[in-house]
Length: 80
Image 1 (cartoon, rainbow, N blue to C red):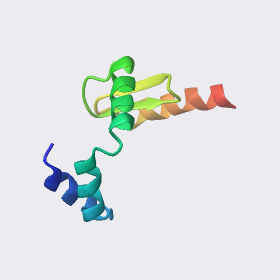
Image 2 (image 1 turned 90 degrees about the vertical axis):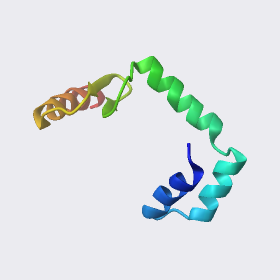
Image 3 (image 1 turned 45 degrees about the vertical axis):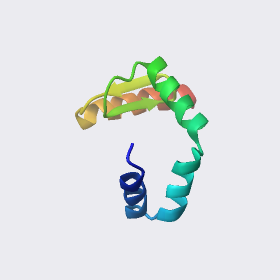
Image 4 (image 1 turned 135 degrees about the vertical axis):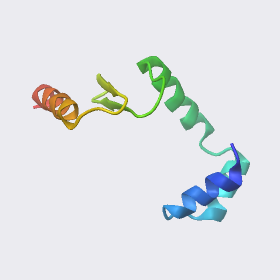
């Protein structure tokens, strides 16, 4: 919740620090963040990492690469 820390993190990945501070101060994107949090709660997200594929399949926690491969193959078969 520390705006300075968040802005510095954003700057470390190429975002403009001053724009980030302004957006945080003004509360920009609050509705989008709340929507994301609500969706995560509905999906049962309780920790990180948590990956959702095609809004249907979830992989929770650190998993072996094979788990991701199987999930991606399942999704691919459905969307083809």
